[in-house]
Image (tube, rainbow, N blue to C red):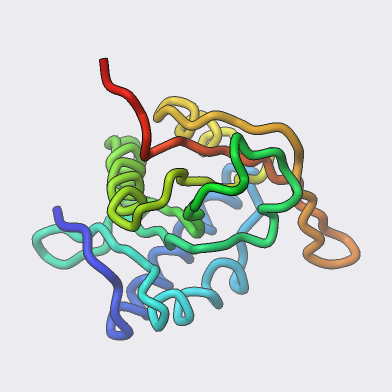
Length: 175
């Protein structure tokens, strides 16, 4: 499998992958994504060269994530060091046909490698409090939860409580 930047020709396939993820999340009582988020952000991610795809030998999309330079919640929580350069993992999803195969961990390793290559010291992310499978994945892969909660108001009836996680990728000592 290869990691590559998405291009505009991938857009319809990427949206289809995310629509299947949304259906699965809804069936598992994690109704936090919809036809607007993340789908309406994918074109902008592609045009700004921040959407990465893991593809198999048939160019099927196995997983995807955006690697962003900022996040609307970044000032609402207590990072280890908020002055160091950080990148933010957004719109992270694994094709439902590839669930339970370790793809999430593989993708996080790719995101960490890219973060290092871009000379950022931290990889950070936000995850909605009810998304226990994602929280467990991040903890299993060495991310630490930081203090604070970002309450993202979607509309008058919906506020998402998001926990923040980070992992230091540069300046780690290997003994």
